[in-house]
Length: 80
Image (cartoon, rainbow, N blue to C red):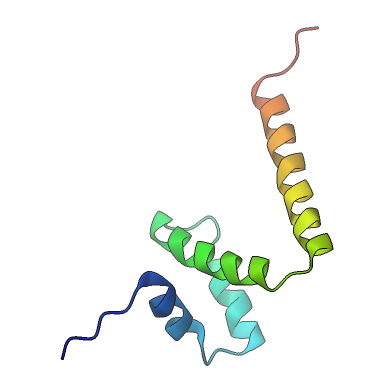
């Protein structure tokens, strides 16, 4: 019998028995690192999103929006 794990299951299995400090380490080590870590961060973000209240989701969206707007203004400064 062949057992096939999908990406979500594989990521969750990888972090399942980690402490809070270890989870933080997984996240901080993945941010800005190899692009291969991005799917794992996406799976972890999905869990955070699904378990967050609407107000917290809105705060995350606002944080992302603000960052994108700031990055665009730095990349494309308005003419003076």
